[in-house]
Amino acid sequence: MFQRTWSTPGVFLPWFSVTRRTARALPKDGKPVSTWPDIDEALLNVAEGVQKAVEDLRKKRPANASRPAVTQPEVPEKTPVISRVKKVAASSQVWNIPYRRNPFFTGRESILTRLHTILHAGKAAALSQPPAISGLGGIGKTQAAMEYAYRYRDEYQHVLWVQANTRETLTSSYVTLAGLLNLPEQGAQDQSLTIQAVKNWLEQHDRWLLIFDNADDLSMVDEFVPAGRSGHILFTTRTLSAAPRNHAWTGCTTFRRA
Image (cartoon, rainbow, N blue to C red; front, top):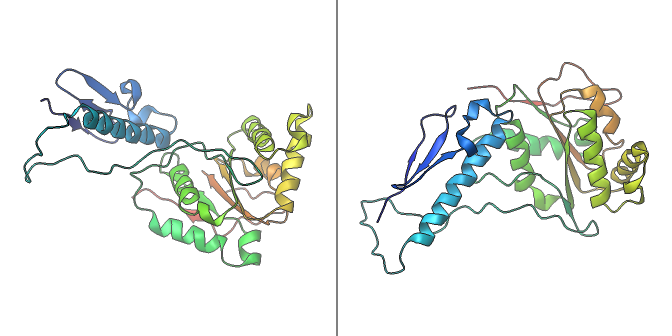
């Protein structure tokens, strides 16, 4: 019976799943983590690969195989399950977080607690001052926002994700939201009508969480932010140097490298 071992030479080098017959690099294609445009996505790819290797090993193990000695490590009876995001009807819940939950997420407890406190600090404070997770690229802003969404999903009727890198991704995200919310304007040729329809819906409903990921150009993102704040808004951004019109960008949480 062959043994499967793991080599983790470092965060900025490929990780490998090795057997006697095969070698599979993680992340995919053996591409070093440090070269990925999105470090969060690379680490999530590693996590998924680790889980798949564990599941494969358990399937190949003979049913009558003897248990290893107590002094030897064994495969846990329960391994974290990474499930695909489910999108359900707008009448019940809309959930469009684009990433699976990272079962190996750890730390940042104080950040998540502070975000929760800010967003639930009371109507005036929470709704007029949406928090932002800020810091350099690759330090885990997206992972933290994603973990917040998964951890507190039961507190919201709808959890919505908007990719805010460019005007094109913002527009595309809002068109997607219009479809998930079954809005009549979802197929409008004039996409500005679709964007406004989504904003109107957000202003008229509550119990939603809206996450703008990679909102580095805050003045551009401001055009997509609904008025009123009947729900919760969270941003991830590399900078808070410019404040958008008519919105308070205070009470922000900042990540720094250790």
